[in-house]
Image 1 (cartoon, rainbow, N blue to C red):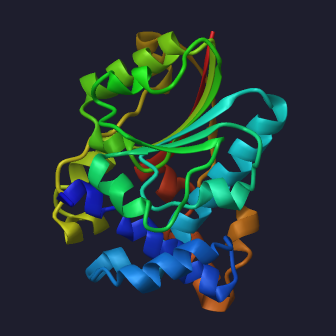
Image 2: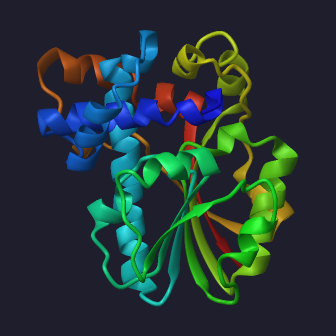
Length: 262
């Protein structure tokens, strides 16, 4: 795998870590895959604080997509940049069509652990091209998950992808987390992804502008460190996380935006 693809092991480790502690997110698949993969992480990428952050982020996505499926039971789900994530199992949806999408080498690895079905599909695709549109039927409602991937798209690539998404489907609900521009600049020197060789990322501070450029509507922003998940931490860990990794500090570096079609 290239260095960007190797970043998938950071959230995988985080989810396995919290799952074993039985807090924030229960993910037996992450536990099993992490144990078998035995990928060597180092430095900040194995920080327990990052693990808590990654798990909270994933839990928010789980809640959001489950709610969207209830509101749009006939929609398809696209998880762009799925890595080794088990959301399709955690959300436990058996009848809706679900597409987990990533680079071919990631999907090849993923197929060691997950099985396709009539409604669940793994798609090998570079989302920077429009090739994926030949694989997934348009003119239908779509629920789009972009967790931990926007920062690896150049601004023009992200705009093109969002334009493709809004134009291909009849209606779209999309949730995407982003670095701020400040965080993207700092990431060249100080970011856990540096530990797997990634230094160039991109940030976005203006969701309204991004929406207007891509045929979408900016719906709302989500808190990435909700109090109910912070409350699952104990003692000094809770205090330290709340002071150093939550609230305004987190918001200055990382944002989560929901978009929809007009």
